[in-house]
Amino acid sequence: MIETYRGVVYPHQLDHMEHMNVQWYTAKFDEATWHLMSTVGVTAAYIDATKKGMAAVEQITKYKAEVKSGDLLLIKSKFLELKDKAVRFLHIMYNAETGQEVATSELVGVHIDAIVRKSCSFPEDIKEKCTALLRDTE
Image (cartoon, rainbow, N blue to C red; front, side):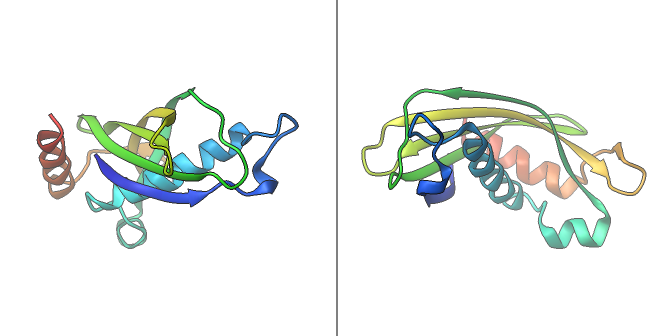
């Protein structure tokens, strides 16, 4: 798996139960997604140059343990499946101090043409990089 995020839980990210609110898990997983996508070439520069990017179409998050203010977080990620226009991937969030798995998020992202707002095939170089990473994690 690839390390895609390191951060801390801030007091303003807590809810009335005194643990990190679900919106912040989603935000941290989203940041991890962009780091993962960059490993295969889907970067801000790529999006700007090609007017193509990614859209999330499915996300399943499982909360396994509470995280509280001051906890250090680490996310590791990997690709699970590549299709012509879509990719499925997994994030695992850990308490960086204890190593405890605190949440997972499995997503499906679709490669889209940002101008016509429709799905489109990944370029061959991105497919090749993703395939190589898939092989490395089998």
